[in-house]
Structures are given as structure tokens and as C-alpha cells.
Length: 387
Image 1 (cartoon, rainbow, N blue to C red):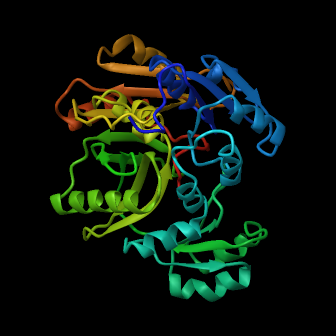
Image 2: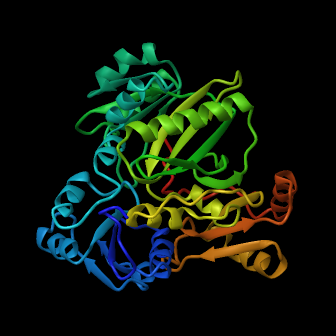
């Protein structure tokens, strides 16, 4: 066995959790590992299964030291934790996912330079630092365009510029630092390809097609998505190329645009566990959580097999009453509901998996017939990068 193999009874630390955190903790516990969690604010509903939880700021070196010294290996569940925090923790415990990849995806400019370097098709972009730069650069980028901060962060938003009169509004959007002005790719469909790598081998999950609301909130993920063979082959090639170059170990995803003429663009890279990849909990033989634990502790990657078509429907607070009815009516739906933040209509309430047919079209018709997702959504945030 490899020197970095961890055995049941070892302690896995998890930092940077969101609604997927509870499932990751449960999976690690089921595999026989102790689990410690570090959070910057108390989240007892998510962390209740952990063996210990430390609550502290991400710049609290005393708390971080205590956390690192009590862990054998540390997982960042999302890419939202500053890479410098992981560098500090790596003094005390292994960080099998690595840190170089995290630094790349947290900086949009570095990410695009990385994708350029390995000859992957992305939207045209320029960097800007002021409103004058936007005015001077918009002709080369064209309308519509997206203005977004270089540094990715929790809750940060992009701004769409559809016409010249919109640029003036960017005065309140641009604060300090460098921003990215990027062409908006007019597309017919969006897809996510999720994979797992141990640094050598790469296993790829079935392709998922995404559905968003008008304000870019994720509504649904459908798998296995059907695309032309040449597009699927190119997506798989790109995923493997990213895995070969990113110096990363664990679960990751690439998001794609496909245009009307069949052109393929990479939207962005996501490291860690995503909302979309929950669709595989009931459509494949191994979940993203199991694969993440396996790569962390040095086990071989599990072979991924598609078992059945599935729709993952994202449930929000305003749909709570309607979903309560569907839970009593649907014998082919499975649910995971989250507690907390009960007063917010836009909160993430949970997921519904719709399965039981060999036809995704039949599953989609069943969802449409309920009209649960037919009403416009209240504004809200997803962990899925809505750029």
C-alpha cells in the first residue's frame, strides 16, 4: 500500500462545508473514519455527525493549528477556502487534493490562463481595473458581456452588460482590484461533466444537462445527457487534459456551453463536491462523496457505472408546501431535505431525485405535470458558479 494510505480509525478533517457537508461527513463515518470539521460559524445541523467541530475564523492560527494537529488528512469540500489556509494546515496534516489547483480556480485570470495553456476553448476576455477600461474594452469584447471580480468568493456576483448604457451602472460594481470583462457566449445548452482523479487515473461520471432560472439559479440536472458523439468525446478529452495538468486529487467538474453551431466552450472548473453531482446518488453505482473519501485515504478509484436516468430537482423554500404534497404522492421520487434558515423563501430546502423510467423525457414530463417548478424563483444563491 502507498505511504499516504489512511486506514479506518484515522481522522479526516473537513473544512469549507456547505449543504453537501453532512453527506460527506456521513460517508466518511460509514467508511470507518473519525471526522473533524472546521467552520467559521456554527452549523450544528450539518456538523452533528462529526466527532469534533472547531469554530473559528480562517485567520485564527491557534484554532487552525489545533484542527490540523488532530487530523491525519484534510479535505476542502468546496473551493471557497483561501488557499493560504490550506497551506498553513498542510504543516500539520496531509492535504491530498493539493493546493496548486485550488489557487488556479480561485483566480479567474489564472484559471483562464491555465485553460489557454492547454489549448481549451474559452470565451474572449480582457482585464479591467476601472470604468474607463470597460468603455475602452467593450468594443473588442462585444455585447452582451459579463463583468466579474478576478477573485472568486462566496456570494459574489457577476454583472451583465447588454448595451452601452449599462456600463454606467458598473460604477457601483467595480470597487477596487482587477476585474474580468468576458464575452457572453450565446448557447443552446449547458452541461456539467464530473470526474474524479487520483493523480494518475481519471474516472468520469455520465454527462449532466443543466436547467437554470432566468436569474441563473440552478433548477435541475438531468443525466445521462445525450449529445453528439464528437462533442462528448471532446468533453471527455478536455476533462482528462485538465486532470493531467491541474495537480489535483479528488472530485472535480467542468462546466460547458454548447452553441447552436455545435461549438464547445469551457465555462469554468469546480473543485470539490458540487450541487449538480448529487444527481449521481441515485443514477450511478458510486456517489461523489464515496469517491472523494476514497481518493483522500489512498483507495483506488471506484469504477463508475450508469444505473438509470435521473433528474435532480433543486427544492427551495417557496416550494416547501408543494413538495410536501408530492412526498405523499410520488412513489418514484426520493428526497433529501435540509433544516435551518426556515424563514427565507429562497433558501435551499433540499433535493428531489426523479427516477424509475428509462426515458428522461418521461421523467421531465412528470415533473412538468406537478407545476412545482413553473413559478418564477425568488432571488437566491447557489453553490454552483452562476457566471
